[in-house]
Length: 340
View (cartoon, rainbow, N blue to C red):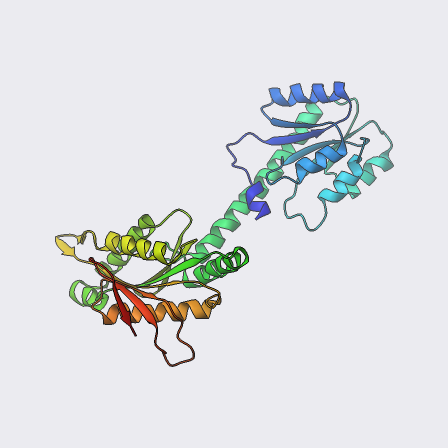
């Protein structure tokens, strides 16, 4: 998101673009702004300034000369105020024009304030201070909005992506993979005998087991994989770029990471394991419903095969009835080829 990338930390030095074709004025502005603690980006003309402002993280404050080669300050203001741009830059216009109508026009076309050359340093400092407060407030609002958005996408108990967010993320990944003819792996995981944990130790302990399982899953995946809570004691993991062989290896590593040691709650040591259904997207497995159906078949097979194992579905069942599908079932030892 452009706005999120543009937002800067309030502890960072404010960044200002100086677009001024006069060498003497540009040097004066540079030294003054440097003394006041700003990070400065210099531009000699309007076209160069516009290219800087189109970058992923452009300066938040902009000082523009009215008359510049290539593109004048008025046109630059107009482009900055285009409705398609989501981030608001504070623009201070510096001009040799003294006519009040010119200043009014500059403000109407997007300048936040104007200074007439020659200007006093105190006036410049005061106006930039106002601009800094405006963009700092905007960035704080952006951060707050992103935090609320992220909270709405996270599962409240485990901190993993919730079901809605996860499905949205994997849909984007499937579309990207389809364009590049790449594979995407999906694991559907079920915590084995979780009802027995709740019945034996209570739901508060069950919540601790769920949180610890989520933690182990997050630690066991790569930085660009994403883990979500499907619901109850079920989780899912998307693994971009995984072919069948890689997915089987990753699934076994994840299964072992969960079962590596018991969850300790007080004096109790609770052994936890997961059953995993694994599937890789292909030309026939591009839709979300297809891939979830295939993973669900594989998970059912893993649970039916004794749990604490991974089943890999190589064929998609069509319709409501499950047609034969080749499935690889993995335990600690060598995999066994089985047929549903």
